[in-house]
Length: 116
Image (cartoon, rainbow, N blue to C red):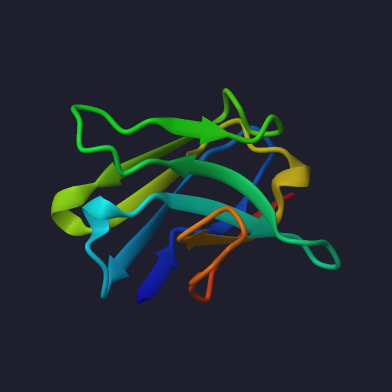
């Protein structure tokens, strides 16, 4: 399994970013996917998850700290999962990873998001 994240950057509070994660080595449509983040000196924190339900939609869930501001979505044709980050706050500063579960299993090198 290889997960490659991109899209991070330095933004001001209130601005937006869109993160992407390309997955290879897995049957993407059969896996639940998550985004987690880790700030310096802190533990890995689950941010959002999306199920692999074979239905017309994928059920998404969010940590309370990002609910209403972040949106997770998938592009099955491109084996990609996105995380739209709106109304960013300084406390959202962290390295963001996509992963196979809420504990960060299989995560890639991450992409840095700095809100300052």
